[in-house]
Image 1 (cartoon, helix red, strand yellow):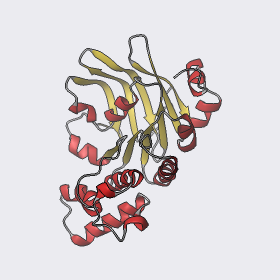
Image 2 (spheres, rainbow, N blue to C red):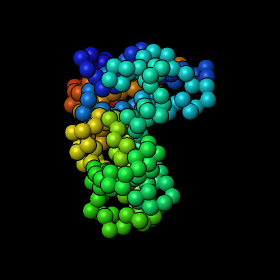
Image 3 (tube, rainbow, N blue to C red):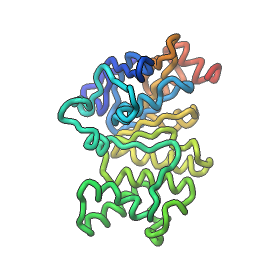
Length: 261
């Protein structure tokens, strides 16, 4: 179910994740290609977001969570002694379902991360500000109002700002947890276009309930299901075109064609 790669950007090997006694993710082995978009699909409760959060150790913040198996970034264990959660989350950033800009200006939001990591030079900060806002596709929209309160932006603009805030710390991987679920159709298409552009420089994983979105934007798709013990298991993983037009598993075919889920 997981195509072996010589140099995957991210990978899991026999990943198991528990919340206390609950076995949330069971024996997931997966290789993620660099500079690609991978969609994670499946019914509610199958562990999509839990899997996504595993890649930057956000589950560490949940009481009783524990991980078994390997999770690797460029071949290095993210749970190894040389990988602190802070350094990991700089390399592997996350954008959540609902926009969460900080109180303060557009400028302060974007530069929060670089300042926290010790970037102080004014010229460098201004360079990061413009580069990140351009990367998020919103420089032209906000260049004349960088000191405007972020919470005054539209919901779609707030989500772009959250992406810009992430880009400012110069990550390698972007995790998107249903980033368009709170957006209108126009903003959704704008974020999808942005993902395609960002794919040239970043490895992107997106959790989505929208099958059309997964088919439109992703290069690869991982389909998760719930087994009899309510654990999330990987049913099929492969090129998106194959998953949607010629799936190898009957459960995959039934899900992508809307027979359940």
